[in-house]
Image 1 (cartoon, rainbow, N blue to C red):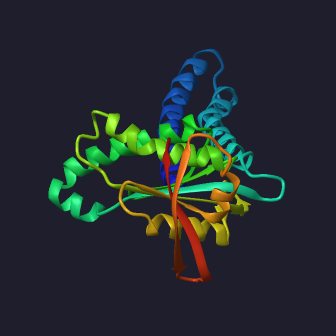
Image 2 (image 1 turned 45 degrees about the vertical axis):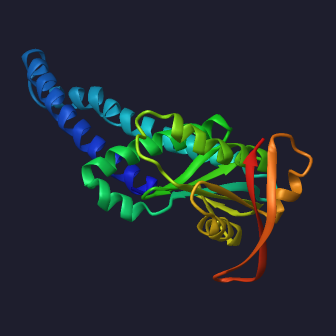
Length: 244
C-alpha cells in the first residue's frame, strides 16, 4: 500500500478511536461535575478538560509525518541533486501464484522489513512503496550503491525470507523536484527504467553513478550496456555493480 494512503487510513482510524474515548470520558466527567456544579457549567468544564486531549494523538502523528518528510528533503542537495534506488522482485506475480496469497503476504512482509532496514542502515529513507517495489533516497551515490549491493545478502540472511527472491535494483543520481515528502522528475523515471532493465539479483547503475564512484573502494563495475528507455530520448549507459 502506498505510504500516503496508509497514513490516511491510520489517521482516520485514530480519529475515530480517540473520538469514542473522549466521548465516553467526557460523559463520565459531566456526571461527576453535575454532583458539584449543576447545569451547563459541568459540560463546559468537561469540554475544557478533554478537548485538548482529543487532538494530542493526531498532532503526534502529524508531527511524525512532518519529521519523515523533512528527513527525505534533508537528503536532497541545495541544487536538487539526490541519489535514488528502485528495487522490485523479478517474477513476483508468478511466485505469488505458486506460493498462494497467504504465504506470499508472509514472504513480502519479511522482504519489506529487510529492504527498509538495509536502506536505513546506509543512511537512506524510503520515499514510497508499491507492491513489492521500493523507491528510496540517499544523500550520495556511494550510500545508495552500498545499500543496493548489500540487499541481496541481507535477504538471504533473513530466515523469514525462506524462498529465493530475485531482486533487481537500479541506482541513479540527478536533480529532482521535492514536493510534500515525495520526489518527482525525469531522473526519478530514469531510475525506475534502470531497475526494470536489471536482471534478477543484479544491481544496475547509471553512468552518472559510476563516474562518481570510479575511485571508490568496495565496488566492481561490469562492462557497459546501452539501453533505450521509453519516454527518455537517446541511448543510456548502465553498468552492473557488485561488492568487492
